[in-house]
Image (tube, rainbow, N blue to C red; front, top):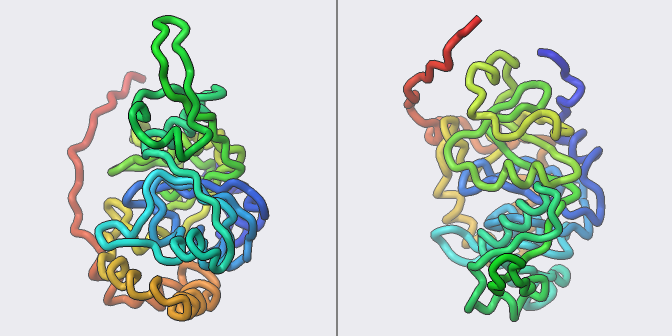
Length: 307
């Protein structure tokens, strides 16, 4: 591989690039949710974070209960297909374990904040908030008048996270990162952020990336650290590597309702483990095998060789 200076362990990457008080975006939409990175943030006991995510789910519930968060910026919040995130509810409604500020957008509204940050723009206009309560409940949603048509629109300010953490299928040692399946906001948040940690299922040779360049969503030029963490998105899925662990999402509804049960979960699955390898060992070979998909290869693309 060309250069392995950016290849770090998860412990090294979080220690180096995630600091108390940071705004940290943890993205991956439906699949590729960066659970392994979130668990390391908990293990290193980061505090006073503003956590940003289009769809906060189990991972944000764990981060909030662990005391890492001061503020949550999001587009939709819940345990998908199951119900509430009760640790987040306790923090918002009862200040347990600590007060939690919330800043709510639609999915598209938060994506527009990323896009403005990625584009070097101060704000991004949109029509989708017209006639909704977003301007009432979120003071950062402001009216602007189009200088060309005079139309009144809403606008959201640029968001430039201190750190973006994204999970992906593969990258090379320089951080050129490929994603397939649901793309989510990984590309936008990586360009918007000041520091970027990419966590991947596998680190591959540069030739593998170059052979299929259209899958490269994040260029290595903006990546600060590359971490190889197979299984790092469990219990969400990584398209082509493992399926979603629906049983874990169902079980979470029971765990999160009971703060003591959540404490026990964090002790067993986060604080009590050194890394993702140990997590997968505890998860067990039977579960890992059950979630492994059968191969389904896409048709090859002929890019042509004009040398």
